[in-house]
Image 1 (cartoon, helix red, strand yellow):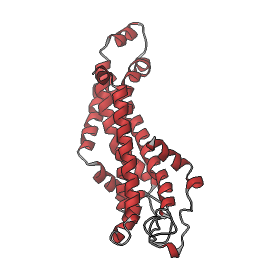
Image 2: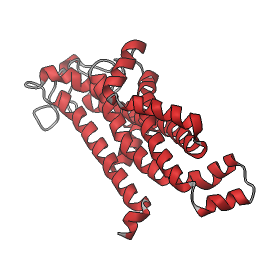
Image 3: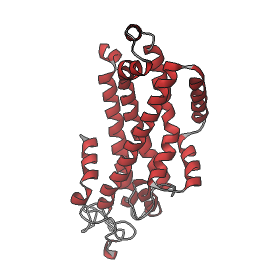
Length: 263
């Protein structure tokens, strides 16, 4: 329900947000939230007098979009490469596996910082940088599952019936390995949201005036003693969303994993 609320808030942000993302009032500069001495904005004002609540709502668009798109692109690349490499083996499997091992040596955030330092900040650059590193996990997962599936009786039966390799791969084996992919994708989505917030916090992610939770936290770190709400509320937005996504992923794992069902 919490994840759904975030998604709906992101979709209908123009209708929900009380103010525009660049609408500022100097009288509300660093204004306290309602209930903490403030009489204007619900969650207070930022250093230039903009409504913090409105910018947090619009910031959900950036975080959710990057989390979903990065997960989708990483899963598509990793699943296809892992399935083909495991089913056909040979040089393709060896080359792609060595590339995957090489990319695993780099921490995600360090790798993304390096890519964005070269290519520059931007929405699609963030997705490219995270996808280029994150397809490896889906590749290794699907490759391992596919190696086990290709030896089972239903695959041998499909071969005996004369089905071509691509048909067996797409129709028979691939659907049977998608449950763990869904679980891993859900869990990794929270990681991608944190990675985007970290890059924006460092100034390498989404650039102003587009609201992003990471850059909002960075704006408020200089005012923690006098205006704690500027950094605290965007940070809480990240915390609640990522925690909810992780709990959702664990719930999907319990539902989709037949071994856990038996337990």
